[in-house]
Image 1 (tube, one colour):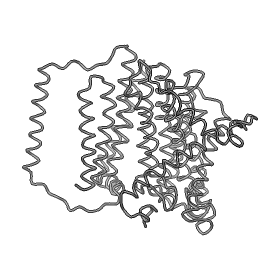
Image 2 (cartoon, rainbow over the protein chains, first blue to last red):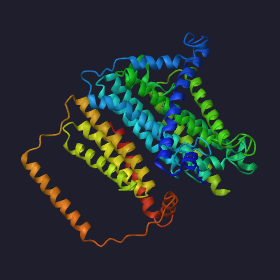
Image 3 (cartoon, each protein chain N blue to C red):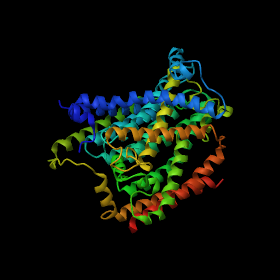
Image 4 (cartoon, rainbow over the protein chains, first blue to last red):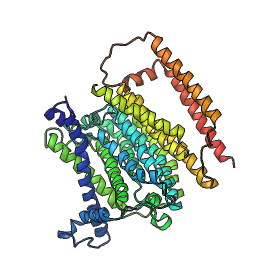
Length: 350
Length: 166
């Protein structure tokens, strides 16, 4: 079955492909506005403040005001920065983040590219964003930027391994790397999602702790990969001013910012897809399921994970660099190995 | 000119142009970052050849691993030693030797390409290569696969040993 509504509607031509490529961009811009507002408001409520209240009713137009502000700012390139790389870096960052959207199944009927390597592809393209970070940090010709970029890349590479183990385990459970197929396997209600061990007989309770643990490991690792608190050491204000984007302002900063929010969306979408059933309805495939409901469930799950990330950001303090590396290599990595072997063994036995 | 041709020439231009920057640029950082586009273009050609797994592996290993390593190496040596890392000035002798070897290599390749009678396999539309690759790796090519993994493990232990001996 064709899994893309645009190819069904418009035929197999370039108009359909353009629509498929452009539509997520519009959606992500909208999402970024909502996420910025959520970040402002959630942080305010958690600290017993009101947050922005003056732009629009309850301040809901605040993100638009921020965008207008960033658009108006002067476009600065520092004198001693490397001009080509300095100006290229924000776009690299955003390209890397946006490239991952290509394989994310938004709904049964809308998977931009339904390839068989989805999971692997997402990991591969995340490298492009890493290069963007290094490029920006190096080209700024600023010690803080360089240190921030180095920390950021070291962190992303360290935490990519436990995250990859978590993802590999779900690939083992689903016997597929295709994200849409991974969703299809998790049919039949909330207890067939991979966070609860996937579909199976009652004795899947033996594998449940491991899949649940992997979900937590992936959550922690994804926070570190998106450089969010408690892992925002690369941007620690008190030590590094703002990390790799210290020298950036105006629209170039906005591109970095957008890239980070898109990255947040990507990791949340991966998490929703591989652990929470993606577009599957939590009540099984007969109740409230269908292409439009699928989109609704997917966005609801992604929204929940994004909210959780924001929640953690305003709850936990920042880790130290050595604690961060300890957590990644000495705790998360062995734990993810154990979970992976347990799941592989279970898959072999049943 | 159909779509496949257009895409091929698009990637070919990217590869050749960025490879030229890698070789000709005086600034070694430009060379390192330009390598990114070369690898990316090669990955695009792989996709065009229906080798999607190889393409993604190319992105993963060359851009995610090797290129990041190269950039880190160049970046840290430039900033720590305080010297501007520039490639040396190319003299006439280097140009002559380089040009000559390029001509010989290119001529040989074109001659071999034209004189070989290529066996063209019938184009079978493939949906997935990853399953076939996985099955072959764990059956016919299990020994080389395991040998390669032991070699990588050795390299990792060796690197850790060298790094700790201070």
